[in-house]
Length: 167
Image (tube, rainbow, N blue to C red):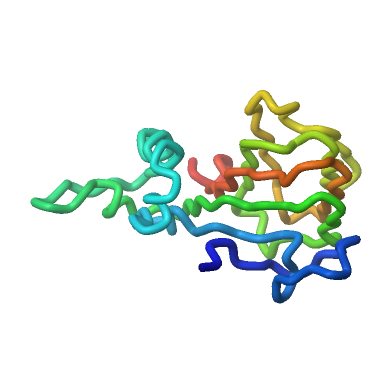
């Protein structure tokens, strides 16, 4: 059973990959689609989902909880949460988002060593340093990633509403 879905727009040194598409960069998600938490996906990583569900900043437009329905199922925000995997030797080609009305947060879970992350003219190397420090960036600026480390990198990615537009 495939639980990670390949992304596109990557270059990988591994020419013999058995995965379809861009196996070097893949997604497990979304865990949260702005309204609902995926019970099926969260069953694979319950501790991570529970911690994220307890973060009230992910749910900016809560409605009243009704019988049998979690308030997290009724959140109704523009936030999306997913997990991304990047394999060693993979380069994500330069790309940019379509709007500056959102920010992207990467929270490294594992494998941040050997990462070179470029946003605009700023380069971050080994971001998070394995200590769980997130980076937040405006993905309307061109950005790309090179993974020269030795282990798969996993990050929680959250698409957040831009705080300057929420005033």
